[in-house]
Length: 117
Image 1 (cartoon, rainbow, N blue to C red):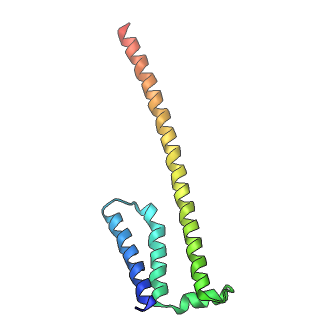
Image 2 (image 1 turned 180 degrees about the vertical axis):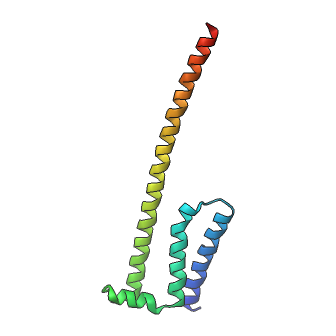
Image 3 (image 1 turned 60 degrees about the vertical axis):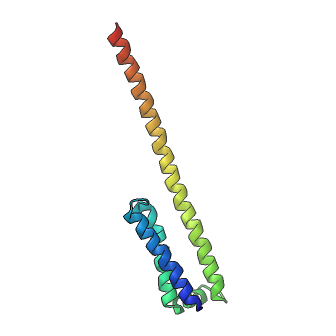
């Protein structure tokens, strides 16, 4: 089996899977954007194999496969960073929501106390 066919197949499967998750509302576009971007890069690189080879040599990599491994490492670090940012945002929202619930409970107890008197 030609490696380009395998690369194209994997990239297309990831692309279609992410699109399907967005369509079914299991994944928001905000989170899916980076996956879509990297899978499209995979599709383009598998259709035009000279692009990654030229970029690899331009950046000083002697073997294009080393550039591909480096690119995958950068991709995973980038995705990890994005997910960490989203997780921190979610934690802030959870803290704010817990504070608001606490204020509402305190206000409710005050109202209940005033009704009894």
